[in-house]
Length: 170
Image (cartoon, rainbow, N blue to C red; front, side, top):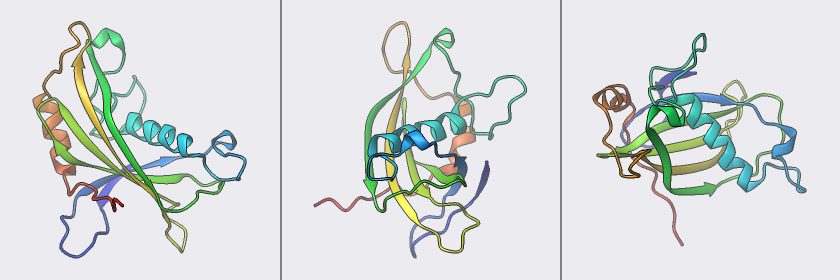
């Protein structure tokens, strides 16, 4: 897991992005021999957990991994909205996909996580398979009410702020 500046369009802000490798499983494919649309959301979920949830003792994680995991911690992370744009079918491949992640916005109790799903960086031809955005809200487990982002979250996540994804709505 690395953080490096991402390639970008002229004029767009250059966010630092997290680069999370995610291995495909044979079960992620559908009858058309490509990653099923619902499996893509599970792959993004896996990348999000690896990028933002605190590691267990002895595990490695990026500096962005500051969210406590488990109901015992008192804070839940709920998906309030998710949008995805599929750009190319993802065939089964032995090398991991690269999920690039950054924040489109840090709110009071929510974050906008932006994703791009690419083939492996070592390949000669880079393919962007999908782009997605998830709005995640931090909620107090007992009251069910939103809870504020902590100063620690803001400190480690601010370097990853960039332009949100703009989708081509039809």
